[in-house]
Length: 189
Ligand code: B4P
Image (cartoon, rainbow, N blue to C red):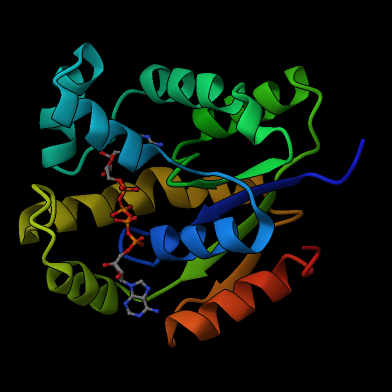
């Protein structure tokens, strides 16, 4: 099998996952899979999943594992993921990480390579409040909740990938960080 780019970008809310994922799309010619974007589209379309997810997302909590895992399972089965993918915002819990391992195994894929962006909380708050996209979860209360949920549920996922995760400094210009991410991935474009 030719080499796959099965990539995961981790990091707290506001760390630049979405920004860097878009750049990896250009670098490697693989699709970005952002569970946050997919869920926001579901909310906007008024689908059943969207109706379930809206209040949870607005307060900064995590959407139930089974909902998000099913979204990712179906998305990874699409033909454009054959050469790889960049997951941004998933996995966010240990159950999601275990399911992803299983999905990759079932689909006969190589294990994912993981990069974690490291950014301090005060900078995260500043970036999210500055982004001005009018997202319902970009207010002080929801941001505090999202950071708590990240520490409690998502940071432990880094231990799941302890053998392979590459932590990189997420402070700097967007170009500097892209260079660091690509170097951490071994620049196998
Ligand atoms: P997400 O959409 O993933 O939201 P996020 O964690 O806040 O990341 P985001 O992509 O917005 O931030 P980024 O770092 O790219 O999730 C939203 C909600 O969906 C969750 O709270 C949850 O409810 C639900 N959800 C999603 N996935 C889930 C899952 N797997 N399980 C359960 N629930 C799930 O960008 C931040 C800002 O920083 C941007 O404005 C950018 O312009 C700026 N920025 C980027 N790089 C910068 C740099 N170098 N310097 C300065 N600013 C920079």
